[in-house]
Length: 106
Image (cartoon, rainbow, N blue to C red; front, side, top):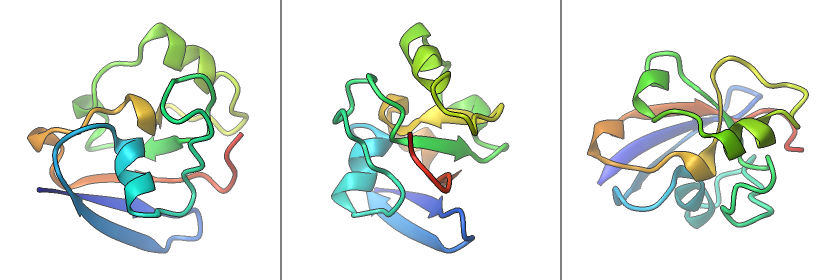
């Protein structure tokens, strides 16, 4: 099991413990984490699972591929640490991961 902390735009937080399997978006949906809409179900064809990865974790979540880069371009509140949760594959190295959800998903 790995632990992930989701921080909402209002600074409230939710810690979930999940199997190191699947994507961060799947884990958020399975645990009813507010702020992750995931309209496309993880197909990387929208930006409704947009998260801000904590600075200390950004280098560990993998690199941004072309399609994710395109989808992130749709979010007006994109930041340097923006990622789509559907593209972050969970593994033991991400135990303790911290992400923040934006106020709105687009």
